[in-house]
Image 1 (tube, rainbow, N blue to C red):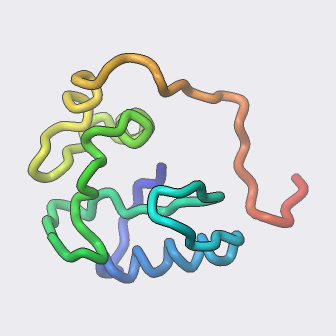
Image 2 (image 1 turned 30 degrees about the vertical axis):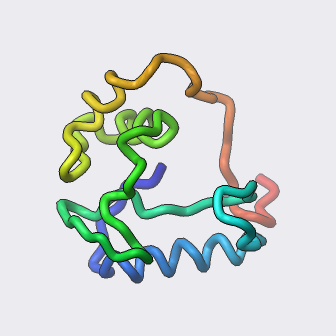
Length: 113
C-alpha cells in the first residue's frame, strides 16, 4: 500500500505504476490470471471516473480486505469516494483472510542490504 501526494494526473500515476510493473518483469497475461506484481490506482482524492482504462475509485476496492486493511493501517481516516470510510468498509467484511507480516522487508531489485 502506498499513499502519496502528487501533482501528476491520475492517468500518469497509472502509467508510472505500469512502468514499474514492466521494470520488475511483469508480463501481462489473461485477465484475472496470476501475476508477479500488480499496481493499481485505488483512489485519487475525491475523483470519480468511469473511464475503462482507469476507473476511480477502483470498482472492487471496497470489497477487498487485502486493499482496505493496509490502507486503514496507513490512513485510518481514509474514505473511498462513493463508498464510505475505509474503516467502516473493512469492519463490514468477513474476518480473516488478511494477516500482517511484521517480518517483511521490501528492497528494490539489486539491493542486497
